[in-house]
Length: 245
Image: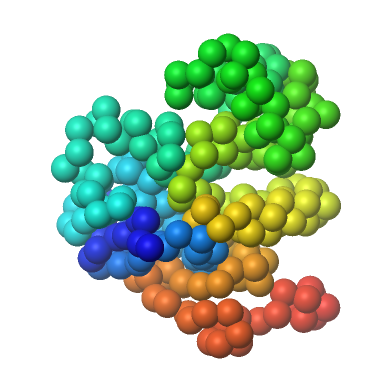
C-alpha cells in the first residue's frame, strides 16, 4: 500500500540572479513497511527533499500525496494533524534543540497534543523513551543529553504519535562513533515494524546496508539504485572504505 508519494517534484531557490533547481523532477513512492535510504553528498538537496515529503515546505512543481491526498490542497490544520497522529513524523537536525526541562516532560507534551489524559500521555511518553533506549535518561533535562541522545529524544517525540511514515534526515553524523553505531542499531529495530515506513537520508553509506530500497540524490536528481542485493554494488562497502583510510 502506497502511503506517501512525490510526483515530479521540483523546488527552486535563487542564487544571486540565477534560479537553481535544488530538487529537479523527483518522484518516489513510499509503501507501508518500506525501509528506504536516500544517499547524497552534503548540500545535495536531501534536507529540502525530506522537508517537502514531510509537508513542511511546498514544492514549486509536482505533488506530494499522503494516502492519495495532496498535502498542499489540504488546509494547514489538516497537515498539522497528520504531523501529530498516524501520519508523517519528521526528524531533522535543523529541529534539534536542548532545554532545561526533563526529557519525559517534552515527550509527554508531544503526546498530549493527541488529546489523551495527563496520565495516558505520561504512559505513552515512557513507552516511547523506552523504545528509543532513553528510559534511564527520562528525568534528565535535555540540555544534559549527548548529541545522540538528543536525536533519540526527537525520535521519541515523533514515535509517541504512532506515525505511519517516519522521515529521518542525517540521523548519525555524531562525534562519537559508538553513538552512531547505536543509532543505526535503533533504526534497524524500527525498520522491523511492519506498520511503519522508514526513510533515512544521509551522506553516510551505513543506511544503505539496512535499506530495502536505495535512491541517490545528486544535483537535485533523485535516481533509484535498486533493491538490496541488486545494484547496491555501485556503492563501496563501508568496511572496505574504512580499511583503506
